[in-house]
Length: 419
Image (cartoon, rainbow, N blue to C red; front, top):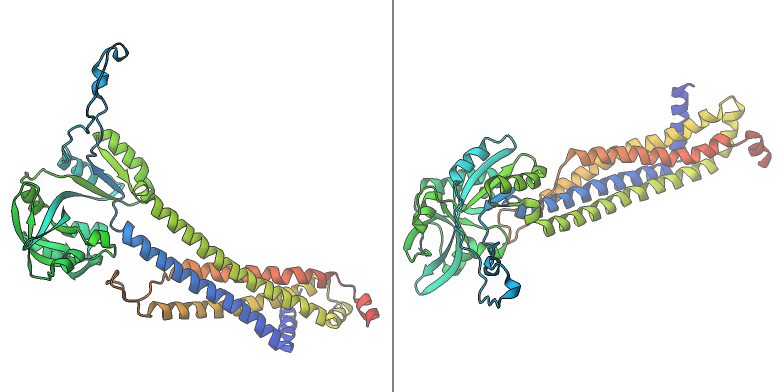
């Protein structure tokens, strides 16, 4: 089999029907280009939506949960069925919010090879004061630089930075919703009322905006030591431990292990965001379903064009077989035509997809809910380009193989007799 002759004949056939060949190649081009553009944009958008929640959510969260006492008053009666028992009030047992032995637990977790980082947090319910106005809120005591490294705090700070909070003992990064309601800005002073009645004056060193109004209207951040001072507790007072893992899949078994090991409540990220993950999965399924459909439609277009080409080339097939070409040689000619269309169309499709993706990524996208996002999010994952070109080659091969089988089995005598 002389491949150079086969390729030469295949190119001659394509050039002789240049308009049809160009339409087939353009079908591949726009199919691949649309696939790459759509999947890059949709996965980029999904990544943005996921990041709003998941970037700020620890993989494992350790805390003391307020729950009903396991032993109720009736459990202390030996034979309750023989006595009249009246239970007036079943209340949660008294639990301290602080985590017992938090510092040794933190030290243990940071030595675990599965853990990227474990950091303390102190959650305090406070009132933000402005004259006679009191706003209910939540104050989080954190280690600013570690919070930024593990949970991307800096991505949500629209004014100031995490370093300023570290360098300012009495500083606060305040939620944008609170700042708007109290008409506060960088450098202003805000007064907080602590649970024990203490009044504290803090300097605003940053504004925080997550894009979720219910969070931005109540949440602010201070240093761990300032939070301990506000609640009037010692340096070992910690209410929460947030853990970031190298592998997200380790979160579920690790949460169970830590809960049993330290007798503490542990919530993994999948339990905390179960509904959100369901929505993400559905969006991804829709994205890939639409994208693959586009590629399949392009493949059928190539099949139809090559099928018609075989009908038009009946005389050529008869001449080729009469001059010594085998059925397999004829089949290779038509498969070569399909692969040439696939390669040219696929390469052009990659270029079109990349160009449109770049164009979208530079399109302004400004919203008050996401002030740190300036353009539409696009995911330039090389895997999508590899998938696109592979699908183009596979689709064009199948689109050429099926009609080529018919060309292979045609009898030249029957063709000439029919003429």
